[in-house]
Image (cartoon, rainbow, N blue to C red; front, side, top):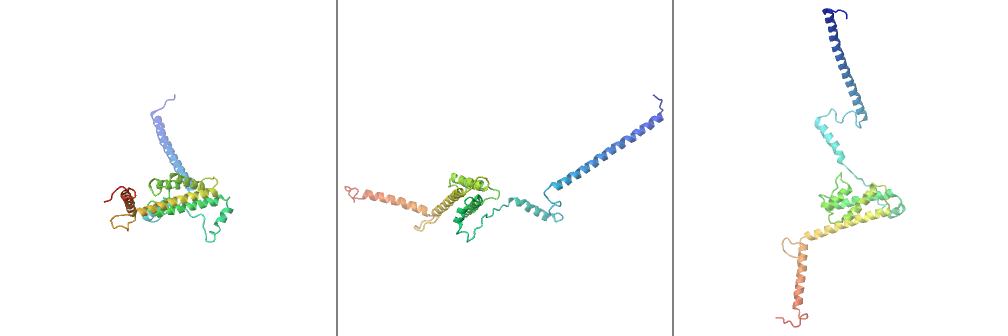
Amino acid sequence: MPNMTNKDLNIQCDGRCVVLPCCFVGRKKLFFMLFIITKRQISRLTIRSARRPHINIGTGIPKSLQKEIQRRLHHVKNIKFEPTLLQKSSNDTENDMCSDSVDSNNNQKFRMKACDGFSVLEEEIVKHDIDNGERHPTETVRQYLYRLHTKGILTKVSLELIRNVVLLYENARHTPQPFEETEYNKFKENLHLIISQLSSDKSQDEFKHSPCLSCHRTNCTKAKCAGNISRNEKRTSWWYEVDDPATFPKQQRN
């Protein structure tokens, strides 16, 4: 081992102290540059792959107007509209039955007629129940009818009838199973049964709550008055039969 003086040792230590900070600073700069490049590449890929414009909607406008735009855009998902699939004109109504017999193999036509027919039931329900009869935008037909059957206007309608309507509607709109004239006639018949049940319930309610005009009592309805009249008729006829000398010949009347 060669002999080294204190001066040579000091020079060697100073060189090491200079080299180590340079290496540390170089690695830090390299890591920082790689981080920036990677971040830029990731942001470019996200902009290209995203289904949105490169410039956000409402850039450079007042903040209040930008909030209003975002509120309306978020409200779009709650808006749903079911258009009428088959538009009928005055000339087509006369040849409706003929066209049904000719196009009996066309499933699409009967599917569209079934979807349009359910809107008729919705209109009838809304007429009888304005507050809770409307179908919500995110509510399916199954949820809509079951809700009205549980706590609504369809409580008196049988659950089997509602289930048949739901199954036939889902078959016509969603499933690939055939939906021909027989299925459409069943669906239309079930709709007519529900509508007739609604109209009968409405007439009964009107009769119960309509005021009575034959008597002068306050808070008297036709249903109460009819019940009182029927009970009085039964009672008078019974007493008449007891006091009738033809029925009881030995009874002496005072």
